[in-house]
Length: 297
Image 1: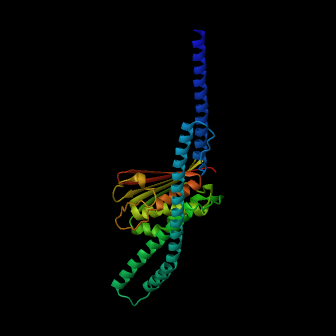
Image 2 (image 1 turned 135 degrees about the vertical axis):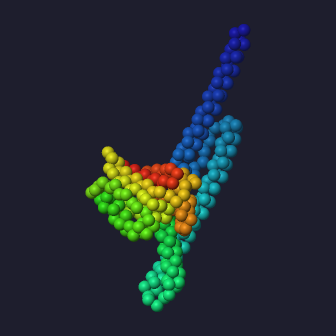
Image 3 (image 1 turned 180 degrees about the vertical axis):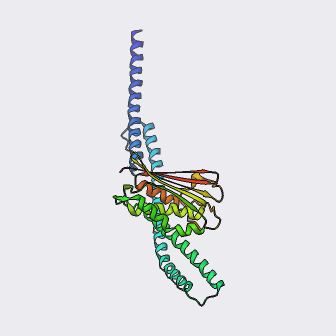
């Protein structure tokens, strides 16, 4: 009886020892996988186990890691090629666009053109301006994804910048019959990259011009430790997929006339992140609302 019990204890001890040994191996594998996953390294698993099952598992995982790393390298390579192509094409187009735009503006100022010719030239000029605007957005997008934009934070009067941006498009807003209600806290100074903030509000106000109708409201206030920019405008028609508006290259031609790149609001969101802020978008029937919240850096 004692002999049987002793044998059983020895066997049980062996099983427990084996399980602990295997458990140790699995913990080592789990630890390595966690490191690879968080550090995004090309490292593979190192296995010192003598257990055939553990070694087989290690080999299968390494094959999966190798396949994933190959896909990642291929994606990065193709993305870099695409970014380079965007950069080169954009720069190649800039010069002829500038020349063509210059010629049309000169011709529009001449007095020896009939009304039909002037209308056609004006249409050409508008299309050239729209193309130039989209080209600028494409170049900015390229700089963003290549992480070549570094904020230069300074104390700037964001109230003045916002008011000036509205003044710059006042005539265009008036021509479209859009009345703007301003609720801007005066002399509001904030730690901000002036050029980036200007681009943000230019894109937002440009969105009002492209898709707005009748009236818009611009609210700028400091609330506690946050800077709040809230812009609302009426729409010509409801937005089908508001949740997609800050996705790259997504566009809804609400005016059915504009030629959008689908980058404007995406760039707004990405630039806002660079300034330690966030963007929220909401729609209510024929009203569009975009809210930017900047925190003290």
